[in-house]
Image (cartoon, rainbow, N blue to C red; front, top):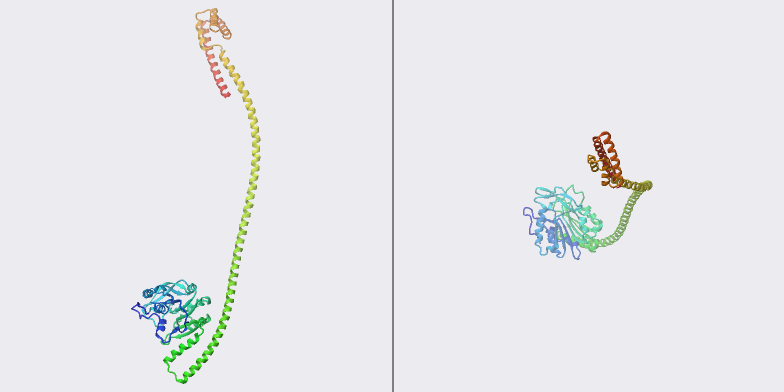
Amino acid sequence: MRPKYYDQSTSGSDDTIKQVFDDLDYSPTWFFSDGTVETVIDIGAMIGSFTLWAHEKWPDAKIYSYEPDPKSFNFLKKNISTCSDSKKIKIFNSAIWNDEKEVVFQQFEKTPSCNSLLIFDPPYVTGISNKIKIETKSFSKIVQKFDKIDFLKIDCEGSEYDILYSLKKPEFKKIKYIALEYHEFDDNLKHTANELSNYLRDNGFLTQIIPNTSQSYGFGYIYAAKIENDSNLINKIFDGEKKRILKYIELPVELQKKLVKLQNEFNERTEWALTLDKQCKDNADTILNLNNSLSTKDAKLQETQEILSTKDAKLQETQEILSTKDAKLQETQEILSTKDAKLQETQEILSTKDAKLQETQEILSTKDAKLQETQEILSTKESQIEELQGNFYMNENELNALKNSLLFKTPFKIARYFDKIFPEKTKRGEFLRLSRMSLLIIQNEGIGALFQALDEKIKRQRFLKKNLSIKLKNLKFLNK
């Protein structure tokens, strides 16, 4: 199945690996086992040529395609939509790299298949380049999400080195087959195809490099397969190469016999190499297991040391907290001691005040007794004053009556008059005394002097009465 949609302004070619699969009589799939392909990853999917080819070859496989260029991704999306079962294909507008961060992505107007994360000038590109910023995804993290990857295809214009060198043995164990396009034409590329091939071999792959001899600049293909996946892998490689050679070169019979002999020798050496490789692999697995055990133990030791460091820090923190609490406890005890002293002082003050209060209560009791006595005295005096008021000599009206009676009566008649008016002996005697005084005053000084004396007596009586009233009020106030 070929892509239906592509940029008409470009050459339309987007995937040289897919071209190799289509155009050569021998197929690079010589290294595939006869097993089922369930998972395919396409890095640098462009408009989807390889993705569509893989979907047609393995219709039950799940395919994950990554293309960073926005324009190419739109064509990829359209081409995938033409598949009858497009749900098995997942596409991502993302760049795959050895890290996750924002990087500069270089675009070429007329050769989008040369778009790259690397800033370089491939000799076969045409058109003006443009630079945009994109986010990358870590391929190591992507591989960790899968249980296995049956086929990995990479065509990313020089980034294949960074991508594969970011993987370790545990991640390579998940990958069965790899087909990639390598590049060696730029000084910015610090690695070579041979180095990458050796790195794959160190991680359990059998590899084959196929340079693209039709071009003057350096690029080609690397095919890699896990040896344990196919015990006849080397024979398949040899048979594939033999078919390709015999197609384009007509060998003489003698050379063909030599070739068969060489093939037999090669097969014998291959068996020995496979045996040796198996032993090396077993030893490598043992070493890997030991390394993993050591790594696990180192990790646990590191974790234990971190836990101990954390506990030491917490212990130090706890000791500081305890020291702080001890200081606060000491401070609290001092405060309590101070408060106890103040409480003792307060109790002594209260005892003193209680004694003074007792003394005051006794004084008040004494004063109450004296006040009671005083009130009794005042009551007695009040009674006496009232008695004095009741027995007072004369009031003002009585004196005026005396004054008027003297104008017409003799002393004897005056006395009898007062006996009649005042039957009380005290008042009667007083009036008799006054009558005699009045007669003497009349005899010696005349009636005018008597009247003057009576007026003065009336004034004095008023004054005394007023004073008695004031004293009575004071006594009543004191009594209250």
